[in-house]
Image 1 (cartoon, chains in turn brown, orange):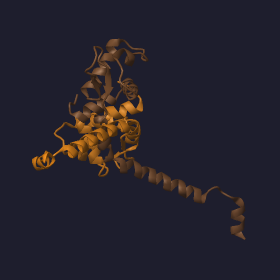
Image 2: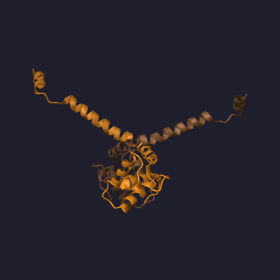
Image 3: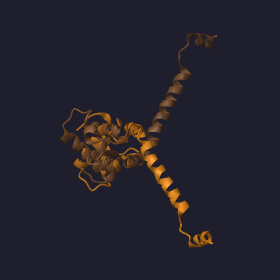
Image 4: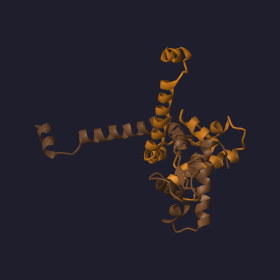
Length: 121
Length: 121
């Protein structure tokens, strides 16, 4: 398993349960029990997911209180976003081509038989 | 291993060699030998990485020619980008707070002893 920061962030995000945990924490800090509540999972399974998120720096433990609420830390996501920017032109080019194709379709369609007849006069 | 599209994309991106392959393909299509060239890796190792990228839909095989050049397909990255947008406010808030903190620092610093003396007069 690669251990560079960006790879660890991507690996942490490669799981729907972990993404759901981040979505929960994006609304505010929560205890482990609160985080676990909506999932049909054992506490050790949830703790393991939290550990992966913590190792990637996406979740931090609050220092206050005994139950140490978990908080979202979005900084690693910003790294992902910056990495993605290099590729934005590639998906936008693709959309531009689709746009061009749809515009061409609109110019030639709908096939209007009356218009054809006029042309033939 | 989760098999939803977004998880597969994140998992495929969670490796520096695979990200380097995508960077190579972002400059244009390439054969497997061309892709393998800069890496100190066996061909089976490179093929395995390409397979992960193909399964995630990030790389496609050209239909022309026997050597079937590989091409970048950025559509899955767009999905990642859209997913990240939900969290943008979190890292921007953090930057706003940092900005505020730096502005406050600038207003109070640098500590100018002359200015202090004037105040004391």
